[in-house]
Image (cartoon, rainbow, N blue to C red):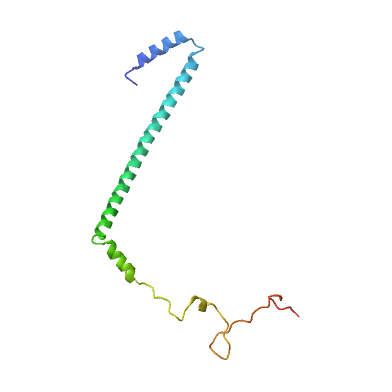
Length: 141
């Protein structure tokens, strides 16, 4: 401990006992113990903050590297692309690849509703309109 041997420690304790007396020495020991505990907690918090700063620095470095990689990819893949070329491709409809087929004239969203089919034909028939004054369900007889 700080270059203090056992004999020096005993001498310091005897002098403290003589100066402070037996009544105040336990209070002094308690206060010193609390001070040492607070010092240890403060040093541990400081160490933790240094460790978290290192973690944040590593995360920042990783994100900076990813940003640089993405910037390089975008720069490499967009060489030769001009605003006029993009505008022309948009105007011609060739900018976006056609992956799905366009809906045909026959299949309109209104035609996709389920309608009853008459037994005589393949044509669908609309259900009869419900009068505004009558209930939706027929009365039970």
